[in-house]
Image 1 (cartoon, rainbow, N blue to C red):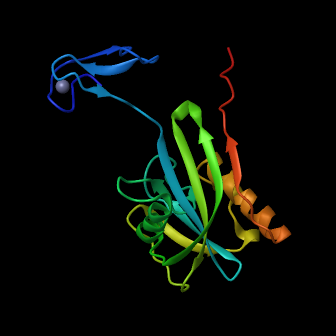
Image 2: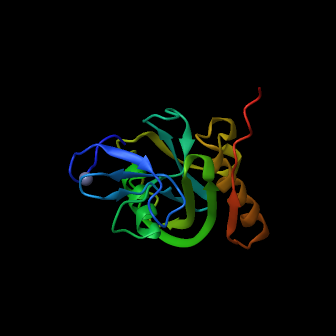
Length: 181
Ligand SMILES: [Zn+2]
């Protein structure tokens, strides 16, 4: 950030009084611009043992597969956000279920929250952010064409839990391996 989003003046990057981290601070209006992690919400939506996956029509990872998911918007709950993404990206009507995973990715400032869900009908349609949408059985999941490690992790938990007949909450931290050299 270079200019204050409130008044347009130049900002400085320093530690405010009583804080312990550098923040962007406006010298003109005194606003402190905090930057905090983003929340990504999604749903693994099921219909008769199959689940909905979308092939991404947008970067990053265009052409790769994911469950419907995206950034949480202001004024919505995580569950509402996941339901909205399901409607927007896959054209599906989902009865939302329990939270399956909370995946922290500290290095890129994201927390991914993936819910369970049941389709109310087998209708689906690709939204503008999807190239195609499919209902896939476990045997047909394109494991080597998934968009992100978080997608793979959530799907692994989903199928492992479904096997045991008992879904539980999986909370974890993904850290990128340090770059060699
Ligand atoms: Zn300002």
